[in-house]
Length: 218
Length: 357
Image (cartoon, rainbow over all chains, first blue to last red; front, side, top):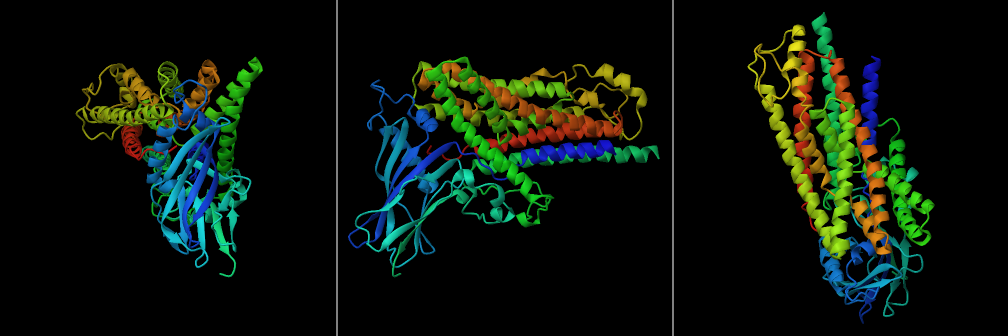
């Protein structure tokens, strides 16, 4: 009897230690700064990203790219890497999810992309054009940045991470929903937390960095 | 009466084994769910009804494990950052204390990191259930596998980065390739194990084995030496447990260790390249092996539990005799099938699109 209880206990302990509930482990950390781009009719036509990577990833990715051996990485040396990055981002929807009302806005191929290396970290700059322009004055719009598989952990930069281009309507502003990655834990992780997952979101959506664009008078 | 008691104990033993196989499967599914960008990781894949929704999972305290895993998660992230700082500190201070800090952090990282998906936990556990009988061997295999993983990481970075100054992307591409190769090898070894077990199980000509063979113990012991799958019994009974366990088969153990080991630990790759960039590559090598030690401890803990449970199951079933043979057989075939299944699933999962970062 004792032995059976013990064996059951042993199995349950191991079970518990092996069932890591959807806790994917980020390998890359990105600090996000973005700007919403407007056209002359004051509609959103694109997103300009400026993503700063952690020093571990930066060092790894930049390994072997200092071709001229000057101890610095210039845009030309980093071009192939930047190209590789934006091309492989496509499969993952560029980790950028734009909504106009209830509709998802499709995103087109990135333009004007390059990598900078400053203070030991890589910074990826790129523009994502929207396939259709969005009028935030007419419909509630939001922008979310996250990795559904949570391999990459995104967080907004501290200061004013999302800006509207100067062509934006004056009565529009952004409201941030930060989710500090280290703080999504403990009490908030209940069964209902996991029930909120659906086929499209994935665990990483719980760490989404979202901004809604609010325009007065809508 | 004796037969009934024996059967009850035998069923207990099978139950323990079945639970083990279920949780190993859960680990595999959990790991799979997290490696593909298009699958939703579910919080609990171990319910007996696969279609059960999360609400139907009744745990005694739903908060406890989630809090624990949240803690593991946060600790991992903090460790990750601390490792970078430790490497930089070692570079700037060059002191023994700084080296010790790096080694300890790496060790801790290895322990915690191995608790997550990957690192051959499920594979090694399945293998020892199939093919091993002693806890000692399970632990040795775990340590060897972790060691080979560390060596693989060091060799990859050593050759590509140090000697060839290859681009980080190339290193990552090679690491991905080796990961895929590792999974393929695991599947192949699993198939090999399965075939061996099946041959052993069905090779002897058997009358339906349901009767006592107490007198055959010594006979069984004397016969199990090197017959790989050959029948040795002219008595025609089911093979004794020690004929099935292959604990003398070093080749299979070496194969599984190599199969698991050629997948380099990604954490080690990152620390190695980082240390190299700081000009202290050898410190990175040290950190890598400290990590491997931590990983080995976690994996061997689970492998020991796996083999211990199998031994317990066998003892519950009475040590020798029909039920013990059945349990050994179930373990052998079930465990081997799992190694094959895991290898195949992981292989397929690893063929996804290249990650951007």
